Image (cartoon, rainbow, N blue to C red; front, side, top):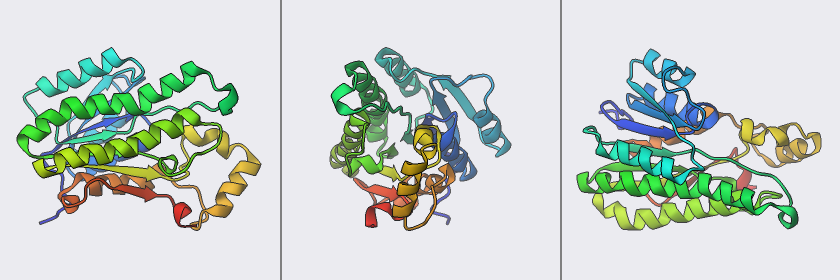
Amino acid sequence: MNAFDLTGRLAVVTGAKRGIGFAVAEALAAAGADIVGVSATLDPASSAIGDRVRQLGRHFTGYRVDFADRTQVIEFAETLAADDRRVDVLVNNAGTIRRAPAAEHPLDWFDEVLEVDLTSAFVLSQILGRRMVQAEYGRIVFTASLLSFQGGINVPGYAAAKSGAAGLVRALSNEWAGRGVTVNGIAPGYIATDNTQALQDDPDRSRAILERIPAGRWGTAEDVAGAAVYLASDAARYVTGAILPVDGGWLAR
């Protein structure tokens, strides 16, 4: 049997409209999962990720949810939890980043990043995790970051949120691993997405980053997707509470 086969599973991927979320949703569908894709700007009726999932022969349902609005997130999670079909896989990928030196960092930026990157992920994990625990099966995957291990520069809210995500991975795993629910995180390195565009556009920062990456290149969203399939599958059924770096060797340098 193929331990990576996700046929018959239902996977929720937040931030699925583009970047890492798009690549993860596509890869999970290619492995056999039906997809619930959600983003703050996704058109539920017509989206590139919806088209791609259907091309792969899987079912797609789209939702538009503002992850900075806690009420919307709770309502979305409760809608899924009340559905006859249980969610098997939750990928907490939606995120935002705000860049400003800590001494001048606006508090509303700090609050926004924590709400989107951390609190919304806990809300979804809590509400959908209840049914997973009852069913004694589930896979929860957080998109963490290198800043789950490091402090970064000019992104105090993001560093705090991603450090918190790593803590949640461990805390939820401690409570739920014995009930058939694994909880893990992926720590992408420097991936060429919208979130890192400012760094890519800065010749000095981009050069310094590349000089430290043993692989010698920026990562792609597709580089992250395989790790998500692994952690969502039965191949990783004894892996829980882990943060898997996908960083081209950055942390080992």
